Length: 457
Ligand SMILES: [Zn+2]
Image (cartoon, protein in one colour):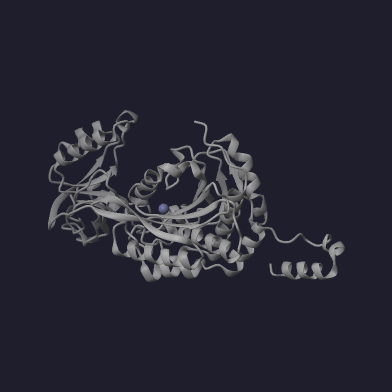
């Protein structure tokens, strides 16, 4: 939208009378939209993050490299005091080999990946395959009783009851003992994706923490068909991933663009820089990472002076259970009152289509007002809804206004999220630009607008 500048210049030359008939000088929001639309570093940054550095498993050297890259890049974009903040992540986990093969029937190689945060098999294990379909732990206990030494295909995973959820450590200890006592030779989770796409999950609080792999839905179906015809499939499996001997420190990246307000209030722009390791973490969450870095770059490049401080936080350990954002909230307890709002993008790389008001009446109108200058970027609905599932949760738990954008899902849930297909091929530049522009407009409104009240429980 370069034409605007020429018009404004012409208007100034022609005098004040004519200037009133011309468009008003660009607002900060319009300038941000233009800067990000025409001069963004989104795609080059995403390529450096995903193609140069690659997958970013929490605790890995690659994640450390990515964080060092982000600190340098944020400083070059105008951030002050870009730095790493450490927290104890427990014992890191490293991927090793993963292989499985049918020992009878057609003898095919099975597509498996070791479930993260599990100890390996220490050599090859063998077992007859059995399907286990238990929705509760009582059902699990009964069904597991006869499956000692088997390779168990989990048709469903038992869930904690609300009562069990009240005491998580006790629940984990009891269910892990139940699983150990069952003495399976191995466990196969089934990927929820199709087209041979894999999935990944796991963290310090996950169950089934030994001899567990994830199998593609197609290969799980082959095993089930054999079982249904009484062919008793027998499998050999080896998983070489393992935990490090001792706990380690993980890090969040924190970088400020200072505001003019002496009180020191801030708006946090957050995304997780860690990723699962089957793909290169382009949509989950390289896209969010470069978007937040880009907003800081654009504010600095335009020489804008926000009232509140813009703080970019690139969390880690998100995929293992929001480890980094929980650690951030605990470490910054004394300044949580200064947070005006938190924006966290973590639903892929699609266009932003709306925001939940987190079911807080008092936040609806300010959200709507802050987003008004984003009108030209497409319809953006503010909906009466809660959201969960990413790094905004620990802030929400403290009553802090936190808004995760709703995004066009594209092929995120069905294909890229946590799979080997999470690569830059699935990021559309125009969509990522639009999402960043919308976030920049909202961020600017929150940086300079009225103070938002805390959540009413
Ligand atoms: Zn994510």
